[in-house]
Image (cartoon, rainbow, N blue to C red; front, side, top):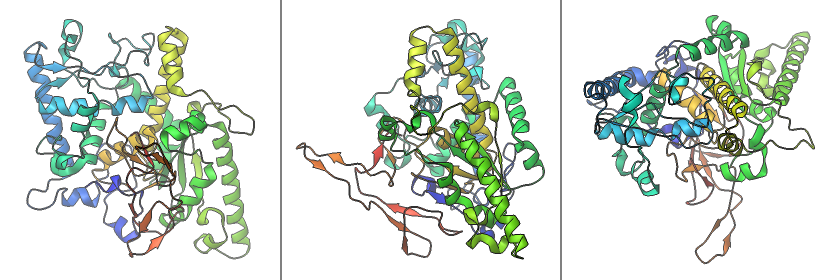
Length: 479
């Protein structure tokens, strides 16, 4: 069940896609159950479908809320989580381990607090919490005196103990353990991020603005692509996250042939860079020109992949332009300041206008992530918290694993620990004696379904699912 924790791609063949119901994506919740969900996850007589398990999880969470409400949120019925100020998707991920512990302890989690990130001027809830964006997860009595509950903070040892990956998933409550760490984390993220009325309206408007709503309504195959630039292009951030700042061209070369293979006609592009949007428009012109030349030569698109750009793909790009910042990666342009530092400075200085900007930036990123989750195939980098969240929400909606391609790392479920692996970003590690052990040039052996070895980069052939054999303690960054 934890395929995504060990594989950077899942690109099914046409035959495999035909076995999946509604794999093309869409806006409806639980609207595209995959073959894995239909036949049950977990295996054997005890196997349970992903959707059935989600219903059981919701029932358990509702039961905990009712118990807290019947006791007016008296001590011993709830816990709270005050989110540490950092990137918004990192803040969302930080709730999973405390919430998991609370569920095992039969305690309701109050809606996590988000002071410093969300603006009191933009949100009527007091204290300011994630209910500014989402349907509150806590009991109705969580306001006022009901907020006096223990703050469930985990130290490093507790973060390790609460890992959904250790001790055969013992941290995950029964009967959900058999579904695996990815299912558990993605299901809790989906429960945490149910849009409130304001966010739902913003999502509908953005889907209409970008053209995504119309494309999905027409039954088109839409690729969801996340290309982050901005502060991720700084040298310090590259080392911290084990992530490089690649141009749009790299993403298109990686997925183009598969997009053509499945008949994708559009790419929903989530980016923070106006330069990336400009590159997308140039790519549209290039693909259109190649298609026109092929038609003039009597060569159809199906035969044009060999010489056409991007593996013969012919797509248009759908963008929520109001979510695009003015970041520039042109030569000589200074990289933006690290977002975490900006957020902390605004909050520490009681910068009202700055906190309103932080609030809007979080909302814009959230809209992009949730629209990515509506697409059929997701392409990005799992070293990005936003892209990890988008894929988790997509999988929760699908009840299985939508096709995906990560250009750097497998998915990561272990918040707060150095558990993210990027095999294309080799870094040495310091030994105990202080000597430097340099990372070797080749870090990984890629096993294809056919059993051979191939390069760690590039798009690969349709139908491949690549596993990796990595060297311990190499290329490890925080999750």
